Image (cartoon, rainbow, N blue to C red):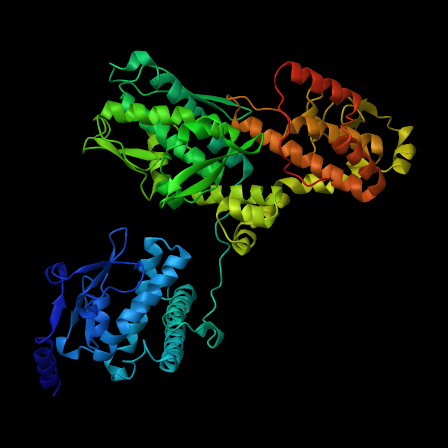
Length: 619
């Protein structure tokens, strides 16, 4: 009996067609998402949808109610099972999907994933055990609701049956269930998520926030290597040379100066590529952009004009507008990265000329090699690959440098945490290219992590650092304070750090070190409020030079943040004195004597510019 059933099944399948490469090569391809309505010549059962990245979706198979997936991801289908209902529904379906994907400005990969989720539920609904009940599922909203409920139960049962396995856990079940409901909601313009509660997805902790010292070391290394490469390779005398001259790649983390000799017989083109990928990594970390965004950036026509007259957020942050997807995309960079953009463009062009190849649209590039990649010169330039982190580490290891263990996702989380601390959620979301909810839910966790590991010791010390006037009078006889430009010192000349590894090392000769010294105190009165506000006012007007390092930027950000924390505590203890000081400094321009003199000195040295805007709120 079983043998007869097997023979019957074999005879039935011999009438089926296979949607293999040869068959699909003959079918017309329709660019998707559509621009407008479906074309008049659209024949759903014989048309493949093609995304802008070249990916194809075999939606023509949805018109056949009998189909099965073969090994190698090829479909077999029964031509006699062609459904007139499905053929009729398909034009409306792809029009609605197109409008939604266009409205969302979805990337090609996102479009492909969405269509795969819709294909998945259709494959399940068209299985033989359903006996064609869901043939009209693409045109009947109530039938679609029933189908989604049945699919929801099936997915839940499958997840529970595999509770102890790893092949179909809760995350996979939630993803399949949620996206099936989402796609069917688009098809019918009905929010099925209000009628069916998808399987919840228990989020993991996600990307683990990196340590500040790891990010500092990573970015300082990229910056120093890029500077070293441009200094060596952009020398006009190298035009006729093939191998890089003997020299060293140098970088400074703020505490330790590093130097690595360039391996002998290293081709100049390989060294140039190292500089190019180093700058790409620098832009990724500094802007907090996604890798996909960096890959899509193109050089705008007005690049030189933007470099000469950049859009400024403030003295330390600039905006450069690249091209991507046919429109301008603003990218926020600190001045240390922005001032190196001109050198990067020169390096990129020099590499292209040495390789004798045509230019390509993407702004950030790498090179391609032959089989003997370690010795042969690059064959040409290409856009950054999808596995950029591995590429970057590999290029640096080739010259003997091991980068700190930080991923591009961690850099984005770290940058987002900084932006959220400095701006309100709406501004932070715009700068990072997120929605406000995503910025708060996904990226603000860095604030908590940083406060627990590094900022918490400073916050817990506020009660001992900031004294009200009564406490000051009580302690005056025991621990007289030495007046300093930002407050008072209990033991001047003998600094002691607040923590074992302070963000800034205490130093009595440098004002910034006092903020992180155990001997430093301020009074919650008008005089000390004016001192701190004067210090902040001068710092915010400093113009960083083109050679400013990442280490200097980090010290600047940390000190500004520390001043803000102290002033907030002083405002809590004595709001009237804080307000009088704010009016005096910010509205009347009356700085303390020391900082007024310091401001004049810096102005004479040409190190100041008028402040355009402030990162902090007034007060």
